[in-house]
Image (cartoon, rainbow, N blue to C red):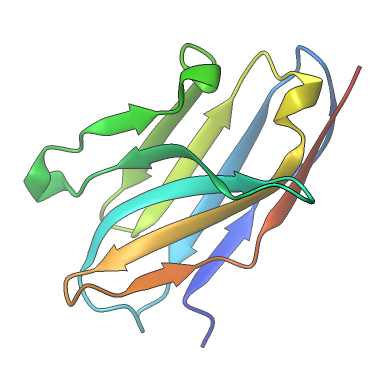
Length: 119
C-alpha cells in the first residue's frame, strides 16, 4: 500500500493558484507532523511548509520565499495535508513531495507531483 498519495499538481500561469493534497494511508501508524518539500533538478530538496499534529498545536512553518502566498493545513480525521499555493511565480516550479512522520519516528514520502508555473 502506498503510504502517501498526492494530487493537485499541474501547469498554471504566473499569478495563478494550485492546491496540493496528500493523504496518508492506514499503513502509517499515528501520523504526526506533515509537510511539503520541493525539488528542482540539480538542487537539493527544500522544505516549503510544515504543520505539527493537532496535539502539538497544529503549528505551521514556511520557507521565507512562500510566506504570505502559500498556506498549509490539515484534516486530522482524514490524515490529509493540503498546500494552497497562491500568487505562484515561475521560481515555484518544482516537483513537490509531501511527507508524514509517524509516532514511531519514521518518515514517509509521497510520490511527488509536478508544479509548473509559466511566465
